[in-house]
Length: 319
Image (cartoon, rainbow, N blue to C red; front, side, top):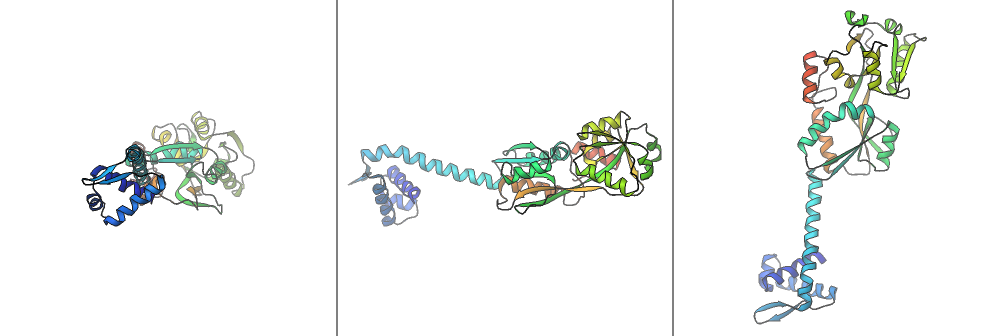
């Protein structure tokens, strides 16, 4: 109500006439007069004197004009800012992401998002899945992009399925064959990345279920290191398809089909607190992600990478 009172005060101060001010503000004269009286009671001073020529500001009224203008202006600025946030024409988007998602899938998604919403400030933090979940719970980030996780306070919105594929160096004996069985894979040195990763768990389970117990392995702590080991002919590896796009298209790695067709994958999801409304930049980001996934089954990467993979017919990328 105080804001409306100050609007009336400024209108009368500018026009010097209650009747014209009431008309401009679509109010009756008694309503406007009541608001002026209420404001005077609130500030404890008379702001106008009535003269034969209309309404004239008192000394207190003249002093108060600048403060009223700042107050009304700040309120209008606040309303505009909230409108920007609702429409994602401004504001902030804070994301938490696991290393694989942040390195290989997120850049392509942000490429589309930033092009559509250039006024939004984006920040990205990286951590393992459990750390990302904690960031979401503590509201340190608005969305967590990682493997799908279950928590009563968190909603998990699936973005895509990240598939594990077998890769070897171009000179490997598997390259000429194009497809191999699990027993042959078990004879190779297997490069594993991040022993606590669900990808590593899936790889071990796949080979264990095939009866392969005695494996020769080399363990590294990240995907990029695993790729480099394979490129240097130190073994073969099951790696996320999103992580090998450039290496395959450039000829540094070769994709090999697995005859048993194990279909190793895990869902990548956007985690958000259930009690936080999905509005502004968050809603816009999820909408961009959904549009990229409307007719496709895999991860969106940048247009350049999409062209590379289309030529190789290795993955059906989003448009």
